[in-house]
Length: 197
DNA sequence: CGGCTTTGACCGGCGC
DNA sequence: GCGCCGGTCAAAGCCG
Image 1: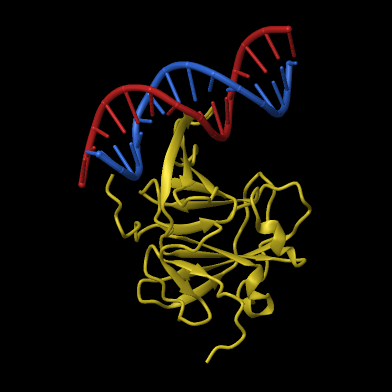
Image 2: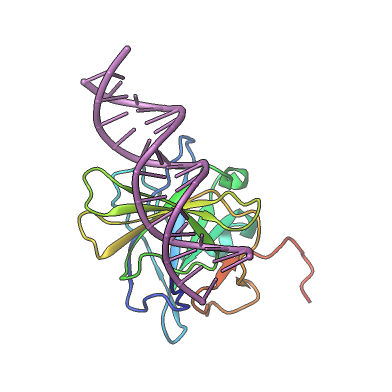
């Protein structure tokens, strides 16, 4: 399979999603849309999932939230910043599910991590199969599911479960670098070191 | 030859 | 209790 370094540049961010969790946690989500020329703009997300919906809160207030309570997922040219309220850092562990729905021709968008496919299932009420992936990193048990939207197969739904216990092969720390992220690079909060020279 | 994908089998949860 | 369905396993095959 050709691991193309560039995700489909024509994919458009559509809507965010949801997380499935029994805990009464409130998540606040924002996204950054990285354009080809590197400029960025904030977008308030709309949640239209029938599942539990995350509070799509105030985008652009990233400075108000401690960096270490964020999780960042990069899908192609899109960077999703998930901010935990309630000091919920510990809850970002295994079991959390975050899904993204994007319009893309590609089945699997490059998010900077290496995945190993371990299953494929046809789902009831959907003409499209669902693919199952595990993170290839030893000791990391993060999983993701990839399937096409059953109502509009031009959309891809990617669901992440768990949090990586390692850094992405490609990382750009977002308080040290401008938000110009090459495709395939992951954005991650910097380690807790207060001394930045 | 090693790593990855494919694919059918198997298993557990859940609803009836 | 039974059957359906989603998720995972693992053997075989493929490809670089």
